[in-house]
Length: 483
Image (cartoon, rainbow, N blue to C red; front, side):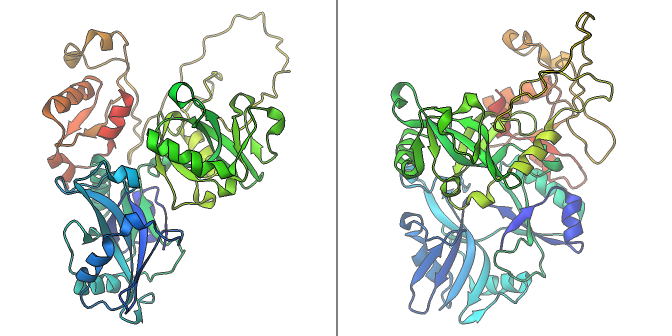
């Protein structure tokens, strides 16, 4: 079973008007476990490929203990690393061999959210509610090893809103919404996934799953290595691949070294020669790389994270190597274009066009309008009307706009170097949650900056208050990327 994006609370209740289960969406790797009566195990990834041994070497023995009466079973879940001290999950990608060595205080934990087969009986025809009851009855959770996924029954829109707010504030990946009466249908997208990227029609998106299309030589100590990569997406309408971003951040030296061997078989060196660009690739001349992939459909999918309004690609960095996804499941051209259009600032009907930096490199962007007749060149140019940026709409017709200057009451406590920049109130009318696990000095510093630029810092009590109806837009992770 797979999940489709859920763009709003209303959309969720249209799909499941009688309520649904909401599970924490874990930032790990999807895992399906098969056990037979001979006590032999097989593990499969989301794409049904065998899972690397080092990721599951300790899981088998604990599954037998967690299901003492389970002679044969098929379990669906997610595997990730959990810090034994903090009890919090570690980021996606830490299951890699060299990465795991950095986290000696963490265990691989298998979070089980479904049971498809138990002791000779297929459960595919049973409802999710019945399958969860079977799991609860026959499973004995093992701390820091085998756990049942966290689940909450949602019956009201306000409940879902608050759970979404809490999830974003805690820096979790999101939620998965499931119909309790639904049966398990392999490869069907009957579940809904809620992530920050999908909310508010996608204008909160800060990630994209892109395909590696090429590479550039690095400089300095990375000279001679493919260390900067050209990423893009597929457009089924034109049967072409379009470049989206050039990214060289996110990999440590060990991962970069491994990538040389992983990518080399599917790379062709063209030394930035435009005559060697394949017909399937639409690329701006300035972005022609040193290497081009031979077959983009055999190329890996990487998740990039970026900062800026909407999905304008600024400061991209690779945060996940999506071994569980193929090019078919990567972000496509239409979706990126749709989000890009929605992320652009709204303009009044009579506003003149204003030239802005094109941060999206959608292939070759040659201007075909250079021959326009400029008969009015003698007229004095008029200053364009400033663009009115509409940041957000929350269940009302009121627009929340950027205010011109920092809060005068608090601005005196800010460094002069910051005040000289005369930043606008970028946090105006936004509710922001800072984790209580932050060091006190860092918490106070961030709180001071947020309030100085129009924001309001919420406490954990505010987040869980059912009477409040606030939308948390910015988390600590995003704040750090802005400073």
